[in-house]
Length: 176
Image (cartoon, rainbow, N blue to C red; front, top):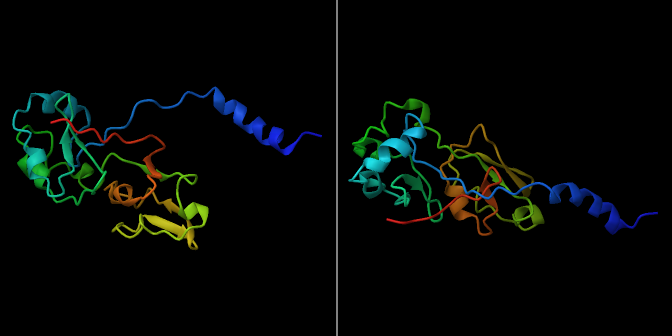
């Protein structure tokens, strides 16, 4: 009869061959017509005005000259200031299909989440104005992807960094 340790080790072996996602995800500001426009139009923008008008100061400029959202301290309020100020045509209030959702799909890692480990914690749920974080009793929070707008407030508030972008770490680089 196999030991308990050998039994559980058998589940781990297939995972050893799976390559880890090494590239971090870059989360872009809302109101974009298409994500590709960041790589083509934002690079030549000299003003980078989107960063300066952001009320929450979460828009940072990457080394390649493109804007991204840094959720390490706050989230996006969808205040529209970046879309109104963008003079390069990348962000616009006319782009209603991206006005209510950011290109971020968050998940909660049960291994890192204190609530999943029987500690009462609502740090991610409290700032969620979309009620996208649901709890099974006091524990086991999950993010309802249909309700989630990707605003990032839950990510900023999680004390253990248990919230990630679809299992991939979100880059928080700040260059300019």
